[in-house]
Amino acid sequence: MIRVFLVDDHPVVRAGIRYLLQGKVEIVGEAETGQEALLKIPQSRPQVVILDIALPDMDGIQVAEKLKALYPEARLLALSMYAEPEYAERFLQAGGSGYLSKEAIEQELEDAVLAVARGEHYLPQSLLYRMIQAQTVRKPGPEVLTERELMVVRYLAQGLSYKEIAEAMGISEKTVATYRERAAEKLGLRSRAELVRWAVEEKLV
Image 1 (tube, rainbow, N blue to C red):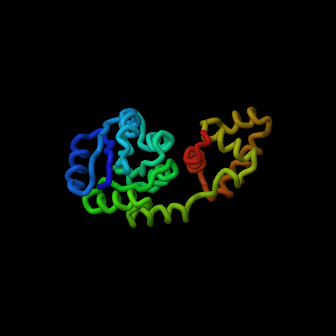
Image 2: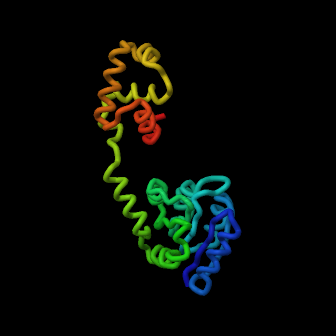
Image 3: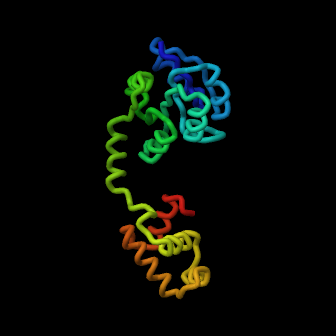
């Protein structure tokens, strides 16, 4: 029988998972926080860890990264209220094997656990489709900008005015505007707000 460890700060959710998987897996341990999970999982030696993304002390993605270093044998399945593709991508990059929305738990949990235990990856079709869509429309990255254009975008995202940017870079305000326009054109963006949002998404500030 597959050995499973549950990590979720809500007792009701853990009870629901136990109910859905009763007779199909062996629950070898439970934790309410990321730190508790990191202490208990290497001792419990589960095959699959069902992990909530939103934990009180650290997010599930951080737990996944630390856990893969401590106990790399574990296969990690996220069970989250966040259905956005970005969370699933980050979890998989952190070493996760599957990602399931809590909305789909009743229909897909058993299939997801079995697939992950076999060494496969599991993503619901709806989430996989949204991830493909997100990849298709993803904006260009910082590599398309010159060093000066990137500096201007960073300063804009920090809330500096054209005058302040010009003084910091030793150039004219007109040149600042030119760099900003070139950056926006390369990125397919129009407004300062869109540039700022892009900079935040790319973790430039």
